[in-house]
Structures are given as C-alpha cells and as structure tokens.
Length: 130
Length: 261
Image 1 (cartoon, one colour):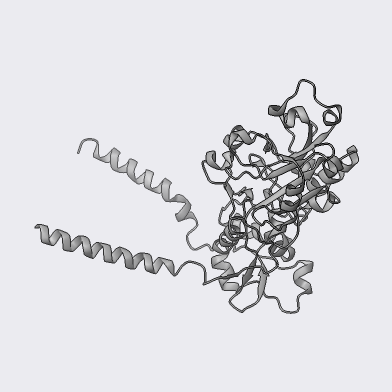
Image 2 (cartoon, rainbow over the protein chains, first blue to last red):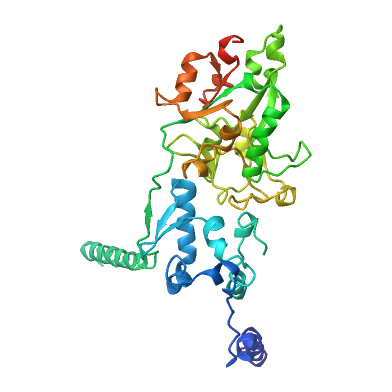
C-alpha cells in the first residue's frame, strides 16, 4: 500500500471525529423530558384519565390523531368510542386542548427532546394561551 | 436454479412478505370505534337559496358576513390583494355577467348579491387539486382538508366564481377575537366557505342561514319536499355561470313574492 501510514492515520482520525459525539457521552444518561399535567382542567378532574390508557397515548397518539383527523375532515364523523366504552368528541380544539392547554410543558417537552417539529398550533388552539 | 425452483422461491417470498405485513398491522391503532353522530344533518345534496330582495340595507348583509367570518376565524385584511373572504357582496353585472343587459332595470341594478362558494355538483377546484385537499363530500358539500393543501393555488385559478382566498401570511394577527371552537388557517393554504360542514355534522344549520333571518334558505336539493325545493318551485331562480357546467348549488331569487322577477 502506498502511503499506508498516512492513510491509516487519516482513517483513525476520521473515525474518531465521526464517533466523538458518542464517545464523549458514553455512560451519561440524557435528562429525560418532564411532562406537565398541571393545567386547570386536569386538576379539576376527579379521575385523571385521557381518552385511552397512558401507555396507548404515549405510543399511539400520532396514529390516533391521524385517524381522528381523517374521520372528522374527510368522513364527517365526530364521535370516538374509547376501549373503555366512553364517548369523546374527536377534536383537538374542543377536546384534547381543553385539558392539555400547556403546549410548552406538555407537547413540546417530548417533541423538542426527540427533535420532532410540529405545526399543529399554526391552526389549532388559537384561542388558548401557550 | 431451474424454473420450478424459481417459482417456488417466489411463492415463499410472497408468503413471508404477507406475514411481515400482517405483523406490522398490529402496530396500528387499537380497533377504534367511531360511531355515527345521530344528530348529524343528512342530505343527498345540500343547497342554498338566497332571497336577494331581503338584503335591502348594508346592515342586513353585514350581519350575515360578520357572523360567518367571526365563527370561522376569517381574518379581516384591509388589502384587496391579500384579503380572505368566505362570503361577500357584488352587483348584478359582476355576479351574473352573462345575463348582462344594456338597459338593466334600475331595481336590479341597485341590488347587492351575497356571493360565496357555490358548492358545485362538478367542482372544477376538486378536479385540479393535485393532493385531493379539496374534495366533494357525499352530501355535496365541497370542502378543504387544510392538512393536505400545499398552496399551489390551482383551485383558485380553476374556480370561475373567485370563491377562494389564499393566505399569503399568518392570518392570526388579523383576527380580532379567535373562536376557539374552530381552527384558524395558516400561511400558505387556500380557504373558502365550507357550508359550515362542522356544524352540519353536529346537527346545526350554517351560521349565515341562522343570521340571515330567513333571507338565506338551506336544505336538501334532492328532496322534493324540502323548503329549498318548495321555494324554488314558487319562484324564478338564477344560478351563477351555469353555462360552464359546474352545477352550482346556490340559487338566487330576486323578487320577494315574485314581483321583481
């Protein structure tokens, strides 16, 4: 190999540089996002229960909201029956955001952490202070 | 590999693929139940009849337009190039240009016609929309899914009635008081009258109909016993630009009781 020493040194430096962010943070746990449920509407609830279970909402809320949007906008439906049999209006403005009125402490907490940029509030939740 | 083995491996791969997709399906949402809202107003073809003779003063119309624009968070932008409107007024010459008469009756000349989206039977805007953001519902209402609108404005070019407005900037600063029941729009989407589809789905009549004190009638055009059909039977009515074949669902009657027609 011509110039083997230089090439291998160069490669090592390259790999070190690329992996530096990982190497420097090995063993350090990143601070997990803190989600706040401290809103006037939620505090008034006797039983703090969302439309579905916490686990379901954590993992499936994007699909749920997508389904709701399609049902409401394109099919004209408005009532969702949860797995517990409860009926809810499928609406961000008239349902979700009534409780979760704290966008910056609730929605943004995780979405900023995972670097997911949302534009829901460009249109929805206009009447609610952020 | 001979032909027989090749076909076998294709079949095996297909089976494997089907299993994978079946497995992926389980990551979808739980079997969500959507039940129809029993209060929802049903029709085969929603239509509107506007009795122009009942819009005598500017206030008569302002009450209707304000109710509509306030309810739907329509911004009030004082610049004709950027304005957003769902319902507005125009005179006979501009509303019914094809019915132009050199010697138009003075009575008709001074009439002001409330104009809005015609919710066409064959909507051109729906034909041209590249993302199906604009679509026609089963009940004939032509509505927009703002989530899908990419702001190309083909629909604005296609609409022969000028019923569509584009949001050149964030409309929120131009909304006096936001109605929190209804979303606003955002920069870069087209908007228009939606026949209050969100109200129809909850069992309520459109805002303009309620605010018009009987000057605007609303009902099922395919039901011969509906109020709108009754009114159309008894009065001479006109529609805008029917020669284009769009089939507008908004009818105008000019004379209260038939005298002016």
